[in-house]
Length: 260
Image (cartoon, rainbow, N blue to C red; front, side, top):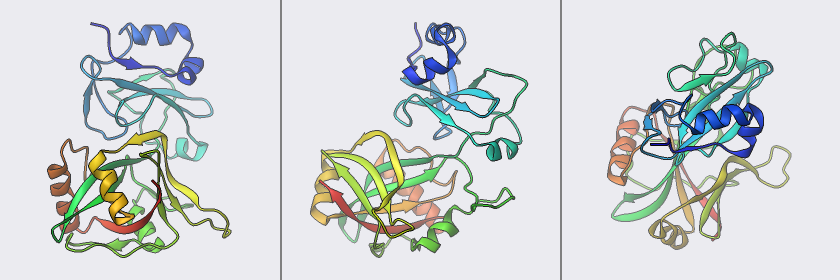
């Protein structure tokens, strides 16, 4: 059976037609893999799988992701990130230059779902990076994701019992019924800029969109890598959120809805 791989035009342009055709024929791609976005297992024989090419100055490493997590794309990696790598991505990659090492660039994974608070359903986005987020300029390997968000005004949660405060200046952009971005204030006071932006607009359910239009705001929950995971159902997502909150690994904010 041919593997269900997506190889975008930009990835094909970088790796060449011959390598791309080998991948699509199943000669140089794994059956099972760990998704480079959510880090849970995928199977390119059973589900659509994206090829994600990480490129540094002298290195190219091809990784795999669930197509529902990430589209096939090229990700540029900085020299600083290269120097910070301690090992190459292994197990779920094709290393196009085995003498080089490339880190996995942390990206923000976003999941939509409805969260029940005080008997009412609220539209929510759950943000979890694929790796530790360091403070700009930091040289260590710590994870400053939550402290950075708390400094921006996100509220630490120990339990999900009430709607978090509105984070003024931030908003969630919904257009033509699809999720496009989470916007934050610009540093120079100009137009808001994207804190997170979808590579391609994300579909949301009709019930999620109806709740967003009703409340005219979206609850944004954020947790460090490994706290939530890729949950297939809303009840499991809620359980993971409650557990993260109880462990002191959850922050949240309410953001006005931009668009429809």
